[in-house]
Image (cartoon, rainbow over all chains, first blue to last red; front, side, top):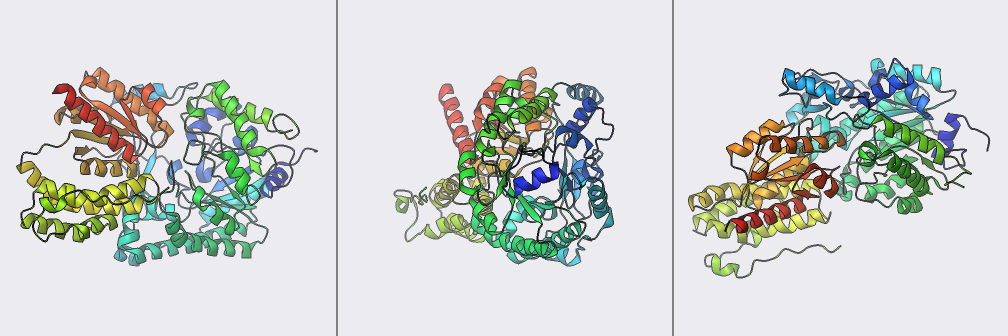
Amino acid sequence: MKELLPRERFARAVRREPVDRVPVMYRMKAEAKAKLARVYGIDDASTGRAHNPELELRLGNDAIIYQIGINADFSHRHIKIGETWHNHFGVGYGKSGLEMRTAEEEVEFAKTQEFWGPAKIVPENFPNFHPITSEEDLQNYKWPDPADPVMLAPIRELCDKYQKDYYIIVDLSSSLIEAAYAHVVGTQNFFLMTFDKPDLIKKVLDGLTEYYTELGKNAIAMGVDMIRVGDDVGAQKGMMISPAQWRELAKPRFEYMFKEFRKANSDLEIKLHSCGDYSPIIPDMVELGVDLSGLMQPTGGNKDQVGIKRKFGNDLALIGGFDVQNLLPRGQVEAVRNGVLETMKNLAVGGGYIFSPSHYILADVPIQNIYALIEAQREFGTYGKYPLN
Amino acid sequence: MSDPELKIPEGWEERAVKDWEWATLWEAVEEGDHGYAHERVKEAIDVGIDPRVILDDGLFPGFNVQGERFSEQIIFIPEMLITARAMKAGLALIRPLLAANDEKPLGTFIMGTVLGDMHDIGQSIVTIMLENAGFEVINLGTDVHPDRFIEAAAEHNADMIGFSALLSTTVYYQKVTIDEFVKAGHRDKVHILIGGAPTTQEWADECGADGWGGDAMLAVNLARKLITEKRAAWA
């Protein structure tokens, strides 16, 4: 097969049509990206809303993914210790990890950020204030503006600059259940309130549905190829909430959201992502007409990649599958190579697959492992050659 | 996967008072009705049932069956949380009475999420389950510096410590914290258990922990086993 343009390659894989080689998608958190950008001599390694895709394209990404919504800012922002920063939802975020660090420890910490080894600890930003915990909060709550140009304007720029060659994905980030529990309501609050205040929970989810539907439609109007909706309902070994509760709380709202998206552009492709193991609801995703999903955390509950591929590979395309919990951060180079080979054998045969680590590449990944990953993906990801012949 | 059944404690009638029933409390704990659990335990105390009996015969059956269902993924986090809350509502009334009867906790357990990590839903569930299993648990919360673990272990004369971590970037601090226990000369005084999504038995061995809590029930069972062995070794 002649060499395809990246955007064709990605689009064809999503539609489960033949491709020349397995398309790829690498996403990195700021620390990993900065480390790698030094190697490639790229000065601007911005993440978040200032996302510069140049490094990812050099690594071979076939699509550009740009994140908006509730997650877009907080995890990429520098928050000072002891400070709380509020995002456009009014959710407060603080920083972990440094609260008790002395000047001496600060020096020790700097040493752990060595170039070749894993960074030993990386401070993360976490929600520490949740704006809606009562009916009164909800009544006084002002939902953010889904037409906010600050969030939307960069999409147009990315489309103008890259869409000729690359597939453009807008990631709405945590869009429903996760947006509620992790951000707007708070985790324990949310889970208890599904029993104690079900009406309040439903109203919060309705508000989120409305916001994300409009936000998505605004992104679609700019001509994006795919909307990615992320909503973490999987834990390491199984779901956080029951499939029945998911079908009650999430499914009808996604159904509405996706219908609206498709009304805006009938060719739009949709990815629904959750971290962890959400295998019990993949059939529901198929029903919702999801084009791409990534139940591919190989260290989690359902590890049967071949089985998932066999069962659902005709109904949706799959992405991910390479272990980022143990193998990528802690494996030896040869083990990383073998891991890529295994993933390709399990998932890429027959097409309909996009190679990707099962999540972001984090700061704990040694740079030699990132190299090994990319090299092996190039070596084992061509159709017509081992292991895809 | 069969749905675990509630185990009715044998001979409970003899340990209660005449015309007493526990079935509604078992059901209340199972279904997470904390208001009723509180009321019913109060009544049981008022009619003079032994607090230990209230705990074992009244509260545990509903809690245990939900714990098993949680392990088997028949119920999920919200259901487990409301059951734990109902159990806690009863336990809050009983605990002072147990203490007054000179009943000692099974052991003292310090729990926390390691430095750098703010995730707490998993360790909160394990904390509640350990408390319900009879441990005194001091939960240091999230983002806990190694020094704070060591200080708390010394202050409370702890038997066990649990380190939770959700991120592959923070599990490393389980090892760092264990190393700090070694440096502080406190490692031999405690059992250290680790848990969290990216952790494995191999990692537990590598980082020098005494055990791995693969899920909430495994963690509680392991803690019970280790404390029983420790007590036996001292006897």
